[in-house]
Amino acid sequence: MQVERKHRMTRQRQVILEELRRVKTHPTADELYFIVRQKLPRISLATVYRNLDLLYQEGKILKLPAVDGVMRFDGTVTPHYHIRCTKCGRVSDVMLDVDLNLERKVARRTGYHVTGYVLEFEGVCPDCAPRTEH
Amino acid sequence: MQVERKHRMTRQRQVILEELRRVKTHPTADELYFIVRQKLPRISLATVYRNLDLLYQEGKILKLPAVDGVMRFDGTVTPHYHIRCTKCGRVSDVMLDVDLNLERKVARRTGYHVTGYVLEFEGVCPDCAPRTEH
DNA sequence: TATTGTCCGAAAACTATTATCAGTATTAGT
DNA sequence: ACTAATACTGATAATAGTTTTCGGACAATA
Image (cartoon, rainbow over all chains, first blue to last red; front, side, top):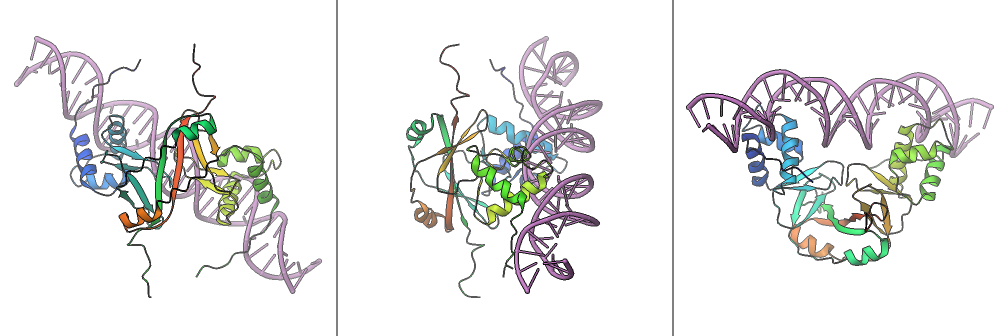
């Protein structure tokens, strides 16, 4: 059985959560590190990683699947999808309630016990889209 | 403008492609490295990485999104989905023709030029599933 | 079969993330 | 408030996966 751990509300954890909730981007640990350092200049990158993982365990933030190899974090926990720009890597929210309802079909086909799925859109964001004329 | 590169068909590239197509798993670069070394004992891991990337550029193989942090490769390029075991990490094919047809809707919502999506299922594979009784 | 330049193997470099550790600071209990 | 227990921090080292570098090798072309 899992031992109950008691978490403390440190200044670092507090600021990390606040800043992640404030920004509308979906920053990497490193990006958030630079944001948080404006308020806590002495914070360590390891502390950012540690707290992001802990906040994730607590269900207070989301971890986006590292589709391109780097992990991103999201302070909004209400269900929504994401779209990633293949040019600059930025991630935007997609408010769209789609219930795929494919779990049962996939389970039948594969023999797996299906627990969920990762759905992320890809495209080119408005900033990266080339102008119509040169 | 991109300069056209001409690729050579080296023994290494040939074996890498053959072996990737032969196995039904979706190996990581490292796993494929060990497989290929049975035929080419002197091959380098860097060569495996280089060729996998090159074959991907040519559209001869697929790169699976590194959802759990490691890249996996697929020698089957006909469209299909994947399901990943959250316990052991193995990836299986899901033969399922679903046309989500969400691109237009997502484009309207986000302003992105939508080029595609990543859909990958998660679950527990039969081998990792706990027995019904102990 | 000579020339060209892509490709190879070995090793170093790089990037993202996690682990280690001694000292710090939050929390619970007086 | 004061104190004790211990979760947490910053700094740094370690790890894992992948990419780059570089001199020599070899496939393609004429």
